[in-house]
Amino acid sequence: MTLLNLSDAAGVRAQGAIPDGEYTIALESAEVKDTTAGTGQYIRVKFKVLELQDSFLTNFNIKNPNPETVKIGMGQLKSWLVALGLSESVLTAFDLTKFWELNGKQCRARLKTKEGEYGFETRVTSYKKLPLPGEQVAGTAAAQGTADTGQIPF
Image 1 (cartoon, rainbow, N blue to C red):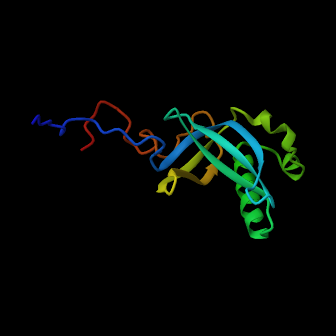
Image 2 (tube, rainbow, N blue to C red):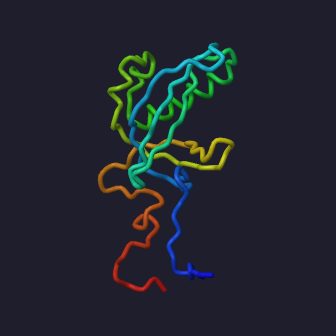
Image 3 (tube, helix red, strand yellow):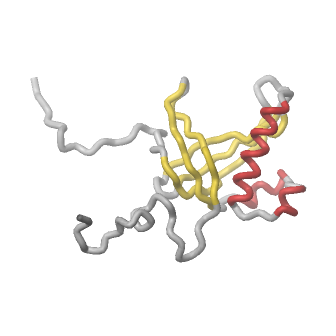
């Protein structure tokens, strides 16, 4: 029997398991799809997590027999569009046929991943605009006051 000492081996995160946290995300692709029941529609969006070079999928429900489902989906969609910096005039008449114009647009997003029935599922819990040049991004070493200054932190 061959024994391995793995105490010093670096762990690898499971495929699709994006660690919970705040990241910069960019739109990779989007398409409007019909629900399985055929009674509604949603926008299937693929976001790229720039810090990790990984991607995840999410849906924005835009048509559904349940008005609460539509309210939540449209609210999530609006939160993302506002974080991209779209103006109120664009939001009052958003043209789905021009969704492709948003490819590559970036914002910050707080992500939470959990293991579900079909593998890992990443959800966006909030969207934020990118910081202005010179502003610190919350969650980074510089923003937490732990930037490498060459000094021992104690």
